[in-house]
Image (tube, rainbow, N blue to C red; front, side, top):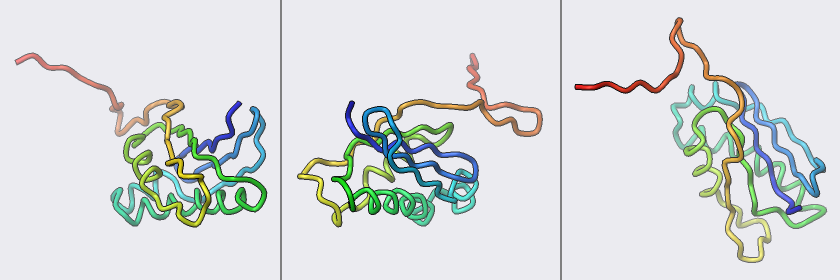
Amino acid sequence: MNPHLRISVGDSTTLINYVVDGEVVVSHSHPIGFKHIEADGMNHIAGSKLLDGVLYALEFISLHDRIPTDFRLVTTRYATWIGEVIENGSYTQFYTDGAPISVTIEGIEGAAISYARHSQTIHSFKI
């Protein structure tokens, strides 16, 4: 099995696991989640805060192994935005043998959050 970084974004934390042969070798719980991303308005600062946790985990991994270029993202919201933030991050301090960072949306876990008795659903209208 290919070594990869699994990034699971939650409401107030992001869990970053380095997985080799199906086993978690390195795990880091980063104190940034959806609440922080939304509070910063999904801007450059929010992306930087999220990316800090990824870089922290990669620096630890790089002490023992080459960093993975295969990242797996698990999130209930903002998958495209988070994926782009991670793919467009600067990883110049790490040796990747020229391979670009690739983010795959592995899954969407959890149910949609209800807002004031309304849930996030897709509606279609006929006009």
